[in-house]
Length: 242
Ligand code: DX5
Ligand code: ZN
Image 1 (cartoon, protein in one colour):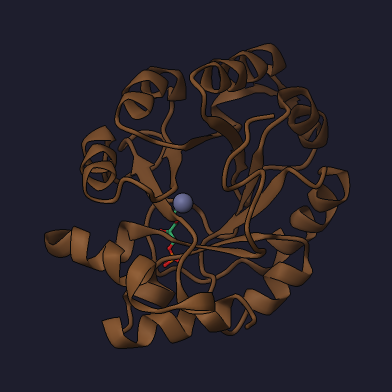
Image 2 (cartoon, helix red, strand yellow):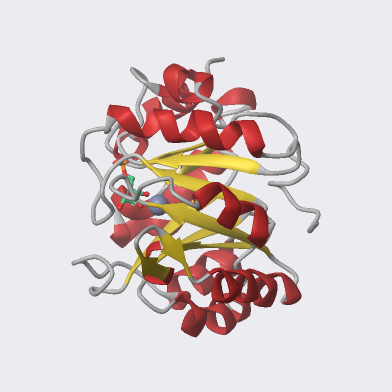
């Protein structure tokens, strides 16, 4: 197991602001704001980078250069990269080179039909990521049935599993309630060093239910960056349930 901020967290749940709804024209200040301005429970634990390729999802967001730029100005921050791309294998090298600490890729491009998965390819990709010295995650979309997913998670020995609670594509969408049933199932099979992340539509009104369903890494974008900078520490504190 890779030893990092996910596998050996200082506290749980971890709050992971997704920079997708941050002001792209002021990205350094936006990130410093959530990482440095507030103290204690109001401080974010890591940054979540949403990478979309215009193919797996109909949007284009950011690539390795954003990761590299953040790594340069924030050398100590944990960078959690969420690859919403059709061919994640293409991006392992570029993101490792750009200073990512963790790469999560989606299961869906590896679907083999009738609820089966191309397990060998998933396992190999997770190993390739880990061989680069960073941790690996597996993500599943809201419509993806749980058939074989627990076996896939077990086979890949992921440091993190990500359950999407919106259909990926953009921030600011409504939380899909029935995805909590998946997190309950998955949380039962994970070991203490494995994290369960939820992403999409999380805010102060539902963070408690998300944590209750077994998630210990909460991603939030519009709930944090949609607020004034001075209010963001308070939001993070409340998302944490503190
Ligand atoms: C969804 C992305 C999320 C998104 C979350 O496609 O993977 O990380 O930015 O945004 P909110 O928290 O606004 O739903
Ligand atoms: Zn994400």
